[in-house]
Length: 218
Image (cartoon, rainbow, N blue to C red; front, side):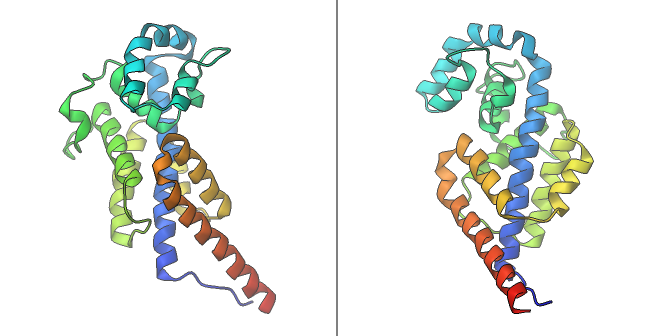
C-alpha cells in the first residue's frame, strides 16, 4: 500500500508540536497541581478576594487578560483552578503564592542545571513557555528537540507529572486534532502566536490529504 512520507521540514514541525503539547498540556497539569497544594480549591475564592487589588495591577500592566480575569472572578459561582491556563497559573505562582518576591531576578533567567528545587523547575517551565511563545520558527532539528525535551520533561517530572504521560507525548501519533488542541490552548493564554499555530494546523491538514491520496492511489 502506497503512503506519503513526510519530508524533513514536516518532521521538524512535528517535533515542535510535540514539545508544545508537553509544555501546554503537561505544563498546565503540573503547575495546577503545584498551585492547588498552596491554595487548595476549598479556600481559593477567599484567597483571590484578598488578592484582588494586587491582581488588578497585573491586568493594568497587560500581564493578565480580561479573559483570564473572568476566570479568577467569574460572574457567578466560584473560581476553579481547572479553568486556569498555563500563563495564568504562572502569573499566580509568581505573584500570590509566596514562593519568591514577584520582582526577584530568579524568575527571569534559566536556573543552573544543578538547581533542582521546585522553584527552579517552575522557572524553567516558565522560561521554556516564553521561548516557545516568542519563537520565530515552528521547526526543530533532532538535536534541538532532544535538548528541549530533556529540560522540559525533567522539570515536569520533578513537579509530579507522570513519566508514562510524558513519554506518551513523545511517541504517540500526531494528527490534526493535536494541532487544533494546541492552537486552542495557546491562543487562550497568548493570542500573539495564533498565526504561527495556524501554519502548523495547515501542515497537519496537508498531511491528511497526502496520506488519503496515497491510499486511494494504491
